[in-house]
Image (cartoon, rainbow, N blue to C red; front, side, top):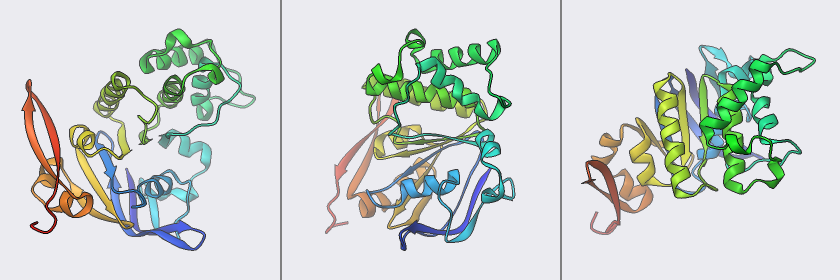
Length: 258
């Protein structure tokens, strides 16, 4: 479990997160959502140990995250972001890099490592592109290659920061199914999203960020009973059933009458 305890953090002397406390648990799908500039990605960076808090503490199983060596953190947390470098590697070789924390130096990958990487590529939906250079892949295919690397890393907590940016609709739906199955397998799944409808369908739990603070922390059902969507996003949420599936319509709120 990752715990943030009264964390304040930011960049170049400008605070972005202000006194934020939250916990993220294995086997749970948590979606972080909020307007642009609300602190979503900064919260993700703090959780990953990529950004050191100015005050407060981030703990992993009661250990200060900043005190844990980077190689050990790789067994605990992993990130799929929306932007990546373009290495001079094949998709298979990139996926194999997910085993970085588990392969001793000098790094020499075994047949088992190769097989696990192929399985990760298969789960990500691009096993047929295993030998293709990452530089020649489309944006969506490249995102799937990095997803395979994360799957091969197999950390306890997986963080997805706007992961569907370059994916077409079928690939987005497949990614959502993968995230659900990862949580069912016991991984903690945390997703930073901008789409409120997707968040409501995907999440066990939603954190709504607003001006660097957590405005709401609870289930999608609990969120629907509040005025937070109107006050933060300026929308009303109308749930409905479509062919046995829960869907959500977002309607512009009448702020004056709300």
